[in-house]
Image (cartoon, rainbow, N blue to C red; front, side, top):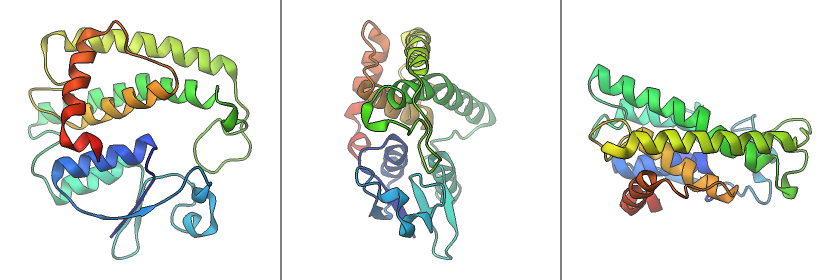
Length: 209
């Protein structure tokens, strides 16, 4: 089993944090995004979408998408449960994970992909025809981000973790999102409850995975 990984990208980091929380060891194969190794013939044979991460199982089947990879390991190694144990826990974690992805992570992607000169004609991650940057999408991302963090900050006012009493996949997703957003110059300034939560999440050993 091999995990095709990229050191600084947010989606592979989400998998690494999850695996560290689970105590699961997987062979990692580095993919150098700065050298566009994800578009090499060798990697495209693994994942034709040209995106990371990808998990190659021992029988040769490949699982792509970070959440799907983590779901696979949740099924094979259910303890400790990071997607919830009871029906209501599972629903809460899924609901918050989707909200964080749709409102927060995509806001950061909009801002990041549509503002950096190095990403000219690469408005979407993965292997696509040239996709031009749209400055208005960077503006949209900034507006979305502000609304997202204000809502999350209020939610965290009376709780330690996002989706329940325990650290979960929703917290992993939010940690990766907040740290990635900072690279797009989107911050959490003024959000004291997110600041407290972020400090606690960043202090977990898994955060440095």
